[in-house]
Image (tube, rainbow, N blue to C red; front, side, top):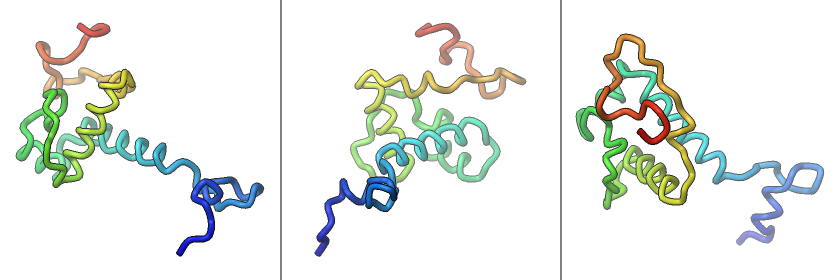
Length: 115
């Protein structure tokens, strides 16, 4: 049984807490890191596995919400879609460098604003 309120545990050390901070913000930061790694590490084994299961885009931007949250990746995609539905521009926080053009789609990627 817990005798301390969760809000008190999240407080800084000086205020009598354990200085954990917002776990929700930390979770969103980790989701952002996985999102970024998916786009910057195309040769990583885990990225190849995700692409083989969800398609070449990894299920990103398909507008499809996964009913079953059986995988961590579907939870990440659902979270990003959920943030977008509330007007939080998660995807706009990232930019893409064209490079050799292999990972860039002329017809599907946003080039300017929403176009």
